[in-house]
Length: 114
Length: 112
Image (cartoon, rainbow over all chains, first blue to last red; front, top):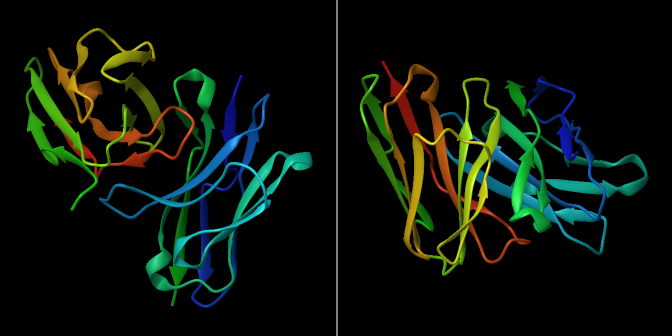
């Protein structure tokens, strides 16, 4: 069965420090992979996506993610975190042959220390 | 212009009531979805419609009835609301079923 695991429920980083949020997936075919961000009381905003091609993808707000098929991972990175990055981050795999649904990880809450 | 818009954003209602959440997308997409986010922030798909036809129904109680009058709209009607229905409901859309899914702002439902 398809699944997505985000091992870290909560991460705290200092402003200006680098960030890596982990995501592992289980999916039999080539995955469509996404990272979404949810600020408190807000909806889900797409940060970036991987469908095919270059395994390092760039997104909005200075985020990037790297698809590693051998590790079944799609980790999200940012070189320098800003206080406004504090939010909940969700990794998801798209199951195109099942009506296009997304299977989400549990989310990682990011706190940023001044 | 908001791409995927939902109304109402906040809804507080009593157990046993019937309520609806409306969703509209102006992206020209042919596929729309309802997702539920529970109190632990876990997101799960409820329904998916492609060209007004139901293609996903993820074992949701039949108190929940989606309706898609046209490709741009997907409404969610909930009968006999229960405390456990309290959640955030997200509408979303995509072009086809293998592309990026865009979400609305969410509707915060509280059943008291």
